[in-house]
Image (cartoon, rainbow, N blue to C red):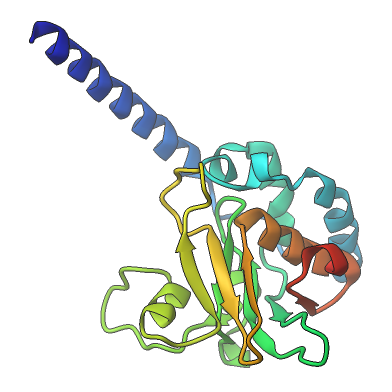
Length: 208
């Protein structure tokens, strides 16, 4: 019994240390650089793309990797990018994506906020559902839970325990379904900036 209690105490200490380290890592300033002009944003995005890998942009790494996060800072207020169905003959819009204000994490949105309120990044995104007080989930997840919108959470990417809905599935009226990880969505977003495009198909290899 003493051994069990000792191991349990060690586990509690480890969890406390890990949580302190994790919280310290995500308490990053939101005072990131102003939105880069289009030419600068394209150059930064082109340089950044090779560094966006699953090891760095999924799970806890999306917050722990300070080098990647700092490289993303000048792009955080770039306009939200529309994603489209990549199926031939379709091309329907399936909402928008943008980088969150912290971490190498992508936020989805089913529509755009009014033009007068758009300042770039996640501030361009809007939900279909109207919050009644404090939201429990991100807006696009609340939409999905109400059976609305184009994008639905599928849970964490297998083998990654960050606690966030990283992998998500886009569903088009044509019947096409596209499941992407946070890494793939981040590459799509940064790839669109690198190409100077305001929209991009949800097909990683052909899009970038």
